[in-house]
Image (tube, rainbow, N blue to C red; front, side, top):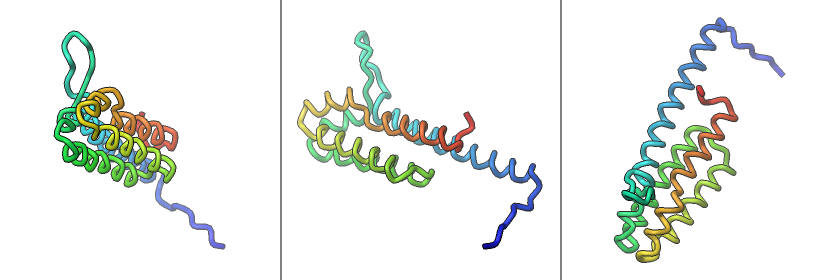
Length: 138
């Protein structure tokens, strides 16, 4: 067994690590923006309930929830690219499946979408994973 050492100066290793963290933070911010658009973009005045495109597009039977399900699956795909574990990806996919299935029920599904917010849940799970793994700057 051969031991390979990183012979770059420590400042080069630190720079590479810093660049990686900046990329991860930028990618996570983009995913967070997408989740916000889908789940919490607007607020119902006086009630404080937040909703997004998922609830609005979900008013179109079957096709609306299928379309937002595809966009939600993209968030899971990006999580995989950022190094999420298979268990975390399965959990995120489960959230998307629950949202897509229950969200497809006419009218009641849109109300469900206002409260469940699968995309925000998935971003929170991903953020927690990245913080634990040290991939995030904060």
